[in-house]
Structure formats: C-alpha cells, structure tokens
Length: 267
Image 1: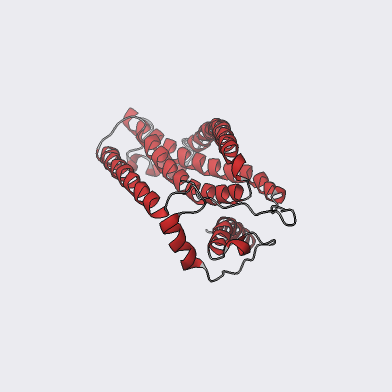
Image 2: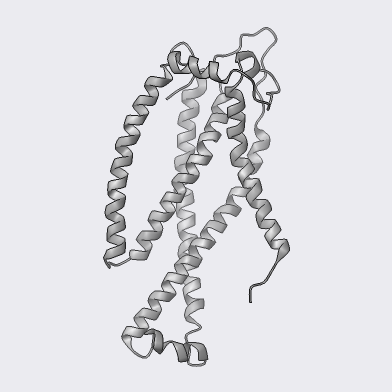
C-alpha cells in the first residue's frame, strides 16, 4: 500500500522550490544587470527590474568587448566554440564506446562503472548551474586588482573542498552499501515464505551456487541504489549550512565623488 503523506509531500515540494529559486535568482540578477547602462549597474541598491539597454550592451560587447584591455566577445565566442566542439566530439566518441561496453559486455564492477558515469554527468550539470552564477556574483563585487588573487583562492578552496568532500561521501557510500546489503540479505531465510516459494522459480535458489550468485548480485545492486540515495541525501544536508554564507554578502560601497570601477569580462 502506498501511503499518502501530504505533509511530507508539501515539505519536499517546498525544498525543491527553494532550491530552484536559489539557482535561478543569480541568473535573473545577471540578466537584469545586462539590460542596464553603467550608472544603473553601480546604483545602490541594484534594481531587479530589467532596463532597456540590452541590445545596445550586446552590440558593444560583441564588437569592442568590455573594459580597456578586453577582447571582442565575438572573437572569444568563436574560440570557445572551436574548443567546445573538439571537446564535445571527443566526449561523445568516448561515451559511445563506454555505453557499448556497458550494454553488450559483462565484466567485473559493471554496475559500479555505470553509476560512476551517471553521477559524474549529474555533477557536471550541477556545477554548471551553481558555479557560474556564484562566480559571477562573487567577482562582480571584487576590485579588478584583486581578481587574480581571488581566482587563486577560489581554486585552492575548491580543490581542498573537493578532496574532503570526495573522501567523506565515498566513506558514507561505502558504509551505506554494507549496511543495506546486510539488511537486505537478512530477509533470505527459510522462514521467509515469499522467498522460499518464488526464489527457485526466479533462478535465485540459495541452495545452489548459481542461484546464490544471482541473488547476491540482485542484493548488491539494490544496496548500491540505496547507498547512492543516502549519499545524495547526506550531501543535501551538508550543503544547508553553506546557505548561511549568503548573509555575509553585501553590496560594494563607493565614496562620494569617487570614480566607479570598470566592469571587465574575462574569458
């Protein structure tokens, strides 16, 4: 029987809506800033209503770039397009070979390889939606002379955080696999009537080595699925304290009459 827990469903939808707003809001702020002129961008507080200078800004950035030493955006876009096409073609070729091997061949740790590829894909999508708006928001409030130091510090903290995060999540996943495997395997007993009656017909008779191997493979697969779910839930709870950093962000303050810094676009 499927339980209808309305309160839990409302909580899950509320968490998803808050997550979507956290991802979409920096993108919307960047879009509003792209529609403003220089005086409007540096006005405090920044307006959250789009202005009318979007196409003018796009034409200027496309042909001249932003700042004194910036390159035209059109040229940088062509360079990025060439690099992206080369990387995409290479990744597609490797992915096709990997998918063919996973589908049509049997080899040890096949399920583990599939989940590692799947999680890596999800991680790339998530980093694209999170780090780009986050870096844009951070570097927009950083003076130009400190951007190189800020880039180095950002990369250092990302590498340290990634090393710690990978180690902790791997340990959590390994422990979850063992616990789930033990709990699921505990149901395989002569006193489980459903297993004793249906197990032999499903080629999972634990009395013979072939059936025992099939049953252990099924239990291991289910245990890995549960472990990945627990791992993502752990990462969700671990990321909640990071939301407190939002309260440390503030708008830059300019002295009266001081020249406003130029906004540069870096490739």
